[in-house]
Length: 433
Image (cartoon, rainbow, N blue to C red; front, side, top):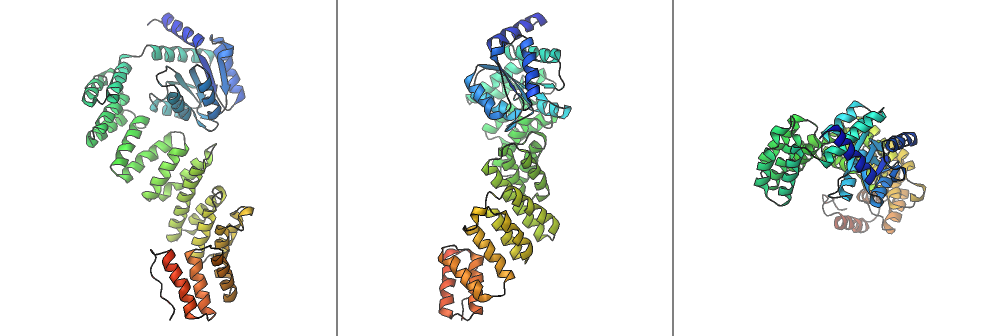
């Protein structure tokens, strides 16, 4: 196709489709709006916004054909937006162009082959945007032979014709110097046939062309998780988390596996990713809180007090929405006989949580180390019990102090029996004589 033909395709496309520009910076949006208008897009068909949520609303409402999105946007990233845009417009030709700030981001854009149609690097010119759009739209309308074969292979996979798909996709390999995408779909066909070793080989071959190829990494991760090869799966998802923009779902995934494989040394970097998120769903806060708390306990067990307290403090700062975390930290610090440090975490509870079970249990645990008044500890322990606030450590403290105050064995045994019923998995406690 000649350059004139490509320009004609481009002009026709932008005249018939709405353009969406997504950038948190209003001045950047204004500049791109002007560039697109100068290139022939109708002003009333150019839309702009600064967040993922608003962008999806516009995709649902308008006939969007071109999306220019900054790498990081409000509520997510351009990658998140493109994924949702494809899901919202199945079968539609929509050009997804990432606007990047540096060469590292452009490398990641290349590795997100098929998920990102193209990218432009800031600062850009009218000419660079025009050249990029002409090529991208032309390739979208008239794809290369390599892309056509991959599309045909995807259809065969969808029809469960896996052997045919593999044979078709193999013919694409010589057509591209780095056919990572073709290797991915060969791997997918093998994976769906439960040919795990072959699929692993295909994904790995794809990664030999591009070692951070997003689809090959994702395919390899799914395969390793299915085979319960968690340590290797963790190394794969760790690579994804390192190179691709953080998302709540991916962060939950990598945090869970880091704990499962005891890669506690990496947890701080995941907390840093967590704090970089514009939006932090409750489920994500819960995951990072659990990961950081377990990591803190790990360091405490290994006599790394400073590291433990650093992780606990970050949980206290970022995850106090869930009162179970300050309670868990206080419980652990009390177990290690650190009441003064534990007491500081009482301030992490919301003001309206001071009559709630987690706070009352935490306060009682601290008192058990700081007070020397067994009668008072019995009274407070019984108050908790009668309010149906029951915790195994609190009940043990209550029983120990009842003994110290000379309560009758029959009375103490009533509470011991209650402990056995509530926590049958615990080691049987020696009953009072």
